[in-house]
Amino acid sequence: MAKQFKKIGILTSGGDAPGMNAAVRAVTRYALNKGLEVYGIYEGYKGLIEGKGSIKKFAPHDVANILNIGGTVLYSARCVEFKQEEYIQKAVDTCHEFGIDGIVTIGGDGTFRGASDLCKHGIPCIGIPGTIDNDITCTDNSIGYDTAMNTVIEAVDRLRDTCESHARCNVVEVMGRNAGYIALETSIALGATAVVVLEDANYNEANVIEKIKVAREAGKRNFIVIVAEGVDNYAEGLAKRIQSETGVETKFARLAHIVRGGSPTLRDRVLAAKMGVAAVDFLLEGKENVFVCERDGEMVATDIQEAIVIDKLYKSTFTPGMSAPEALKNYSPERQAEMKEFCDMRTKEVQKLLKISESISNYK
Ligand code: F6P
Image 1 (cartoon, rainbow, N blue to C red):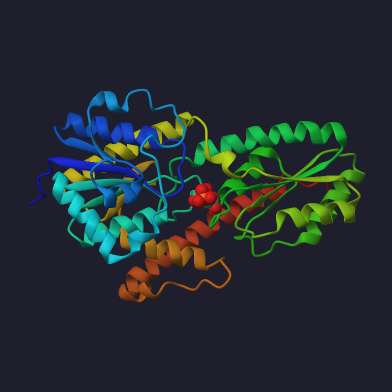
Image 2 (cartoon, helix red, strand yellow):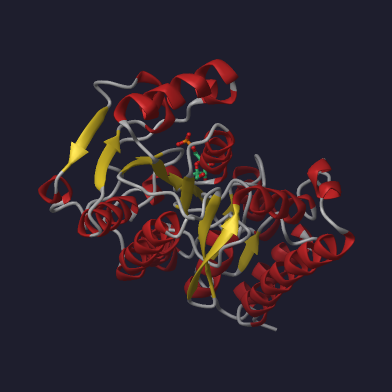
């Protein structure tokens, strides 16, 4: 029989993302409607460790007028201590003290590892993916991704205006530590001359230089090259080399955290609402140690451990020095094959995007 929930906690952790507030509101309002008590936990796992002073009982008005605001009203922290048993136990004690029966955690991969540890200590957790990078392999979309991409295209459209006036190139680095999705999709939306992501095993700088030369010959004045942050220490040097080898004056811009702020788009607000409602439903159905994934428009519950393994497996296919996770061996050969197939599907999606980006940016 499913556990009877009376009180749930909600927290945001890791890098913030636009739409987190919409998710906090959705979870709170929906849970209150279901007759639960809701406790807002401030500064993520750090707040849970600290306990009193970082925890507030929420009424409906406590989450009013936050839907459209960027960042997270619950604040966030990257809590390194939370890997240690002593601190996990303190967090568990806080849950017992407040009578919190389960927690909804909103964040990225680090957040889910924390949630998984809490589950192992008897506190059921449901994760909601909130990260601009969209780098959680098991879900099609994470909260914040759409807004971040829209912010990128707004900023780079502006850069293009001035590049056109001055016949320049601009190399733009966008966020995305372990995934090039932001770079890939925005490169298409922006008609970028080239995109550089870790996932592209065939990337060749000489081709980019040649492409710019050919297009300049054909009369093209402005050039935009998008580079994902994950391609470490690359973008600025590339700008210098483009200038010296093509003769096209080239500027470098790093959009960095500007892409993490701002009011969430409609897509992120709706995704946050769907995921928030699904998270509470999953808890009430007795699911735990799962996170809410969007797959083909549906909200599905995915085991957190499995999701972490799939995530590492996928990233190991393009991240230098990273190998398939040890934990993969814990699964049956059939399940391993399914996991690999899932990763192949993600790889194919990325290849498709790369092909589209390339095929509509040539001046040949
Ligand atoms: O995980 C999201 C992200 O925005 C990454 O793209 C980026 O590398 C990282 O967070 C930056 O983190 P911080 O806010 O700790 O500098």
